[in-house]
Length: 205
Image 1: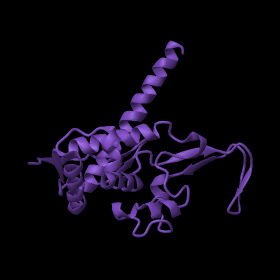
Image 2: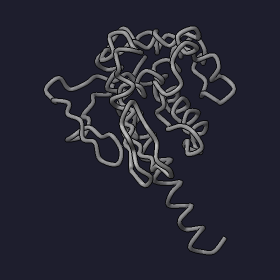
Image 3: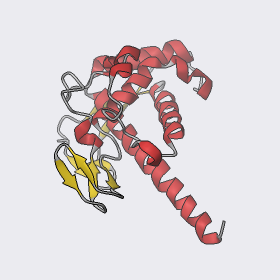
């Protein structure tokens, strides 16, 4: 690669692999802090599985509760909240004629809260993500990493990264949300909380 290509690749890796994961974790900590029962089950799983050890990729398949929490959070608050695609040829979509060269928006933030696919769609229910539920879900009802030939190339890496960070921090810390801070969505390139996300950290015994 040329020097410019190397630079562009490095910037892309940093921006796409850092900010999006940071935003995903921000929303996860918020959801856990405002759902104490889910946070308790999260900590119970980490204590039983890790036994105080630092998590490694090998233990991730055993962290089923943690994985469901991550999956459900990414449903409610996908870091990349909207994706776009351009048509290369005219198509008919539900009776609408779409010309070639049209730019279509498909926002996971909206589609992943559709009551046709998710009961109580605005609620945080990690336990909905059973194997049976995932199997019957339509293909693009849940796509926080996009889909098709343009799906995020870092899908697997981001999932592993988020799981390891969750387990690493969660084994030592609990989060408590500041009840005086009003949550408001700020949909920029990534889905951010307006005004940040103030949290209280409580060290676990």
